[in-house]
Length: 355
Image 1 (tube, one colour):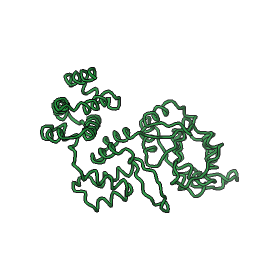
Image 2 (image 1 turned 60 degrees about the vertical axis):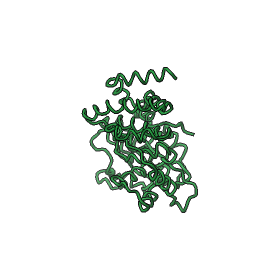
Image 3 (image 1 turned 30 degrees about the vertical axis):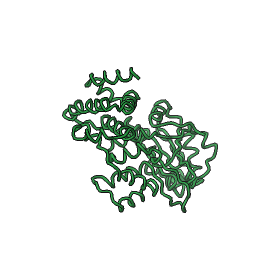
Image 4 (image 1 turned 120 degrees about the vertical axis):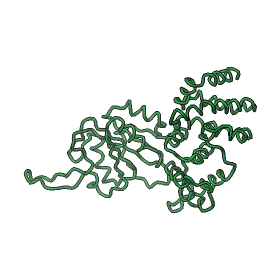
């Protein structure tokens, strides 16, 4: 079994792996493999070319069409549309490798070993990364051990916390964020009873689509339940509908910008609800603080919230809040508190020392 890595560790592996070594990522679809790779290599000025091998019916889709060279009389191949002609290195992302036809996989052998395609050499410094789907719900092709041996293999398993931070940065609806925080097992579902291959299970792309669907909609009625269930499956859709039909928690933005308005509600919350609030506050501060005016309000309202936890003897909630502060997942938020709210920092240190 391949070693598991999360998003942070994957970035570190990409930094450490030389260009002449190939990487294979195993994992479910829709967990962000291509997005992380594109963002990482684009920041380094490298173009990422994604090829979906499972959709290729013929090696010609990969290597290009044959033609006769009139000068030599030999049959050669026209470069495919994606092949770099400017001499700049690329990242070739071979997605769905274990869903490719055997004849397509044969073409991959020379590409993985020599970075050659039908006799044409990829530019120096080019990288090859492949992705394979894992799970009984997929129709997969067995890979030749000789091909597998040409890759460093990792099981990509990004954590729910990593996805929640990404989702907050990308404007995912807070109702979705809070639901996944409380029901992290519903982020990446696992198919159980395969219904002719049509069983729908939740995945990260699906929850982003749910967020887009309910954006600006306050009244989530039964037809929305069916819409959502069509995206993430009946079980996850039902759980989500039940969750948002309960008492709605104030959003992090509402608390941090207008604490007094929500103080009474916050005082009435139970520990698991305050834990959700705590996480949402840290996520918002890590990703959502846009201007100085907003920061000034946060500097006033965040200490008020923490003071409420103290006065209401919500020590377990305060302990959870303090663990988020020291956990290392929100470095920008910690720096903001350390530099801008020294009294709050002292209160946190005093609480931790007293545990």
